Image 1 (cartoon, helix red, strand yellow):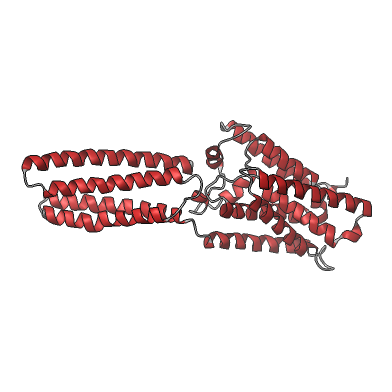
Image 2 (cartoon, rainbow, N blue to C red):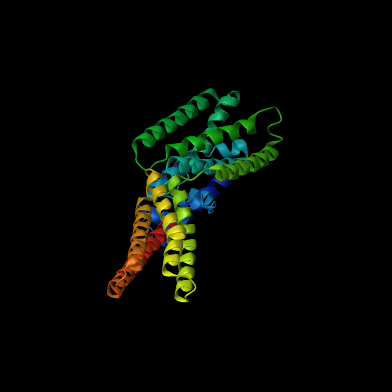
Length: 355
């Protein structure tokens, strides 16, 4: 095989994927079936994080896999398409691989917004999409027997993966399809026209720029599920409510406002927003898979907060000093319980976000 036809980029990509798998196992992840959290910790694609600023996960997740079988099958499929790189050139092959992987990651975010996403499947399907275009557009350049054999191999690959994608839980068929479509589209641009060979590098760079721009645009336009809006609202409300509550309590203690004024401010600026958030949470519908525990804990915190302020309101309405003191004790216990739930919520959020 000549230097020009040696698929060095393919070799490098296989090596990077293998190295990343070794790093996964070295970090403590199972070599057979790592948990979704382990994949997220290592840079897996996860809507809760990817759509909230950590866009780099679209790239890192392409080189992570759910176990040795996952990475072995993807790399075997990539190896079997090693003739694609010499046909398109090294830069074009790398662009096809990476852009198809990004497209697969985006599609998986839409199809499985609550799951951990990882794997080179979108990239591999992109390579096969480019191969399919080559078979159609450059058929005359193939020996008829080689063309037929390669076409059958491609059809077998697509058929088997379609069946596996439809019947196996956890496999994102959307990522496969998106990767294939992007790879095929890139292949058309790279092969079309009489000057395709001379313009290969220029076209590759243009496709890369366009693909990155479209990926960024898609991320900016993607609207998280209503559950994610609740998360953002809760984070903001916790900060403002705590600040308002502490400042109002300080003014009450300093004698700047009366008990009735204190309760009025709490009802208007703290209790009412939490009740509104509770309504938003219950109106959001079924959350993405994986977010239910977090949202349940948020619901528990909101319920505890509202119960806590109901007790404080009862304490303020108590005329008898003994009854007032008893209600304040109840309030302090409610505050302690609310804080416990906040700690549990924080732990669940950190578990999901890999912090």
